[in-house]
Length: 290
View 1 (cartoon, rainbow, N blue to C red):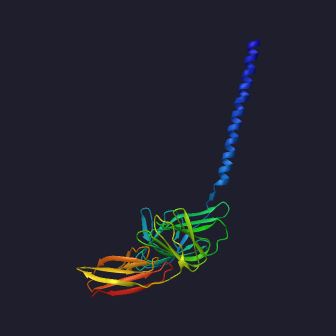
View 2: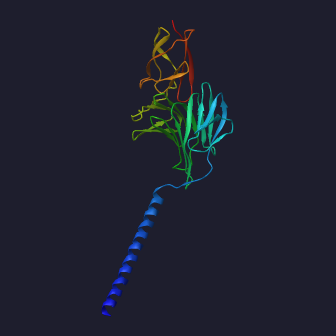
């Protein structure tokens, strides 16, 4: 009988210890869950969109296998939805609830990366531009953690309320020019603020450059224009943040704005060139090859 009593006492104590472990595990789980909830912002589903306005020329909407002409009033609401402008085309994308406007120049592709609303009302808008030029007019954002960002192969340009432009060359170099407010350019774990009246450039794999005064300079300086059979060699210089286009093809320029390229020689021996700034100012040139 004494043995049985001792066994029963041991069993009760063991069970009590077992439930103690269970309670400890439950408590740890609750604490971990509460900590994760506090650390990670909660994304809630609130209707958000980009609205297509004033499409001019050939403006294409795409998502996955779906490709169609973009029409005025069309709304983009899902990650991956894309707007592409062809040669001589343009469009305006209005960010919902009057956040701002994105003016998309010709030969530019814009893709939604994020279009979210947080549990505290913050709005997160991330758009990707792999090449081309966009101009943004963003009203001051009321929530301190709201953001509008343009992602490029070189880095990120983010704002909280400003007017600025972004140009992305074929090799991914990003030029940023700020007319009003300020833009944070980020790459390689470094962030440089581009204030109103300044511009800078970011090269893939390098941190953003130190801003310099805004140029808005569309000059095309040609130092060599030489026919070589059915091609023409063109050597010259432009402002490094600009886009340079010869015969409807974007060209790469170096960090100092210099270029040395060979393009097909047209039958009429006239090469068309366009210089476009990040803010959208552009100049057309007709180069006559001797």
